[in-house]
Length: 112
Image (tube, one colour):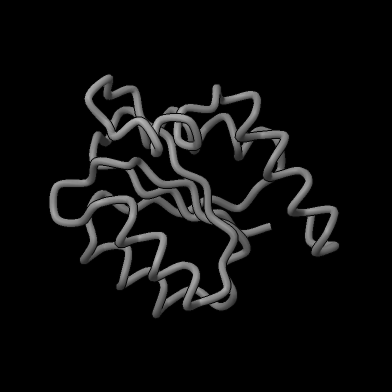
């Protein structure tokens, strides 16, 4: 299963990618909107995206529109206490929930 991580902090992106790769996922990371667009053009059929809500050049809600248009399942997270209340409820899973969600996507798509 091909997973795209969009996270502007390189250390955080590497940590998440390492955990997912150890669990058998094929992982790509992007640190910005430009890198995200480049990867989406280069990668055939991204199966899922995990996105930081706060990427400097785009907001999570704008990324949601992009991934919805591309029919890519996506999940957002943030540790920002100032994120809008309606966003925090959806965007603050712990990483175990992210892995469970990805495993469910892989089973549904038959791609892991």
